[in-house]
Image 1 (cartoon, rainbow, N blue to C red):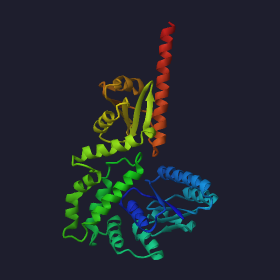
Image 2 (spheres, rainbow, N blue to C red):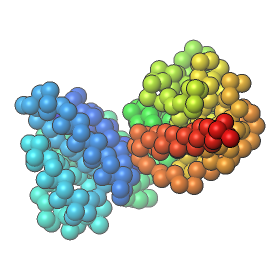
Image 3 (cartoon, rainbow, N blue to C red):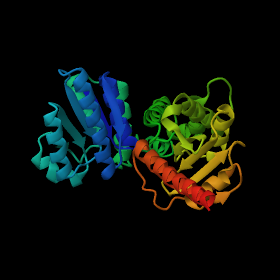
Length: 354
């Protein structure tokens, strides 16, 4: 059976996935916040199931959802669409807001007395077997997620919660698998401190070093530079996915990449055939970078009435609609460029005609 595991984007959500990773090999992970993002992630899962069914019609599939509560409409929709694909669904959650759904759908398991990670661990450990080290980690997550502040594991859990919430170095929209791998790594390294005296304090002191170790390959550097090298490599290795064009110039489009000046400039230096670098953010801002091959101040002016310097400019894309899929984000930028370049070409033709 192939498992598609959709979970929340906090400590409890990722930790529930760490539990299933311990028990299963054939599993794909997805993470989502609440609301519309759940629907988009579910659509993504359904497309993968359909694709795999065409290759292997006898493949059995389970969609596992943890630490996310659905509404009645979502439950009915998900159940019917999976039934049509001869696939199952199981939801393990602890949010009381899902009570109505839990009463109606037998696959919707709700227990507000435990965090989703503990529910997931109890469910699968009863089927397979206990894992003492994992069980200890689950207690840490449970104590902080349902705020059992008098428990032994609580303070250490608070530090782990902070580790996940601050793990912003890898964007989880354009690099979802890599971002998850990073968070799994940070939590696995954090667990090594458990059992030491003042473990939560020692872990808190070492977070920066743990982050650096994930990104460090050959030599040490600042965390910012190490992250830049990592992101530039990811973009370079997957250039086709990120490439866009503006007239006869080639560029790269990212989303909420962070530290655009460093990453953008590093990428352009290492990829001299690429003329410009654009990062669009959830705040509707667009940052433009170049390395002498194009004047991005004019580009920003033409596209979004922005401006700045020849190699570093920016502006506001007012009609940009934030999305949880890179492809949907990229399509908006391509449409913007197409519309604006066509307008410029038309105006140029009119001037020639005069």
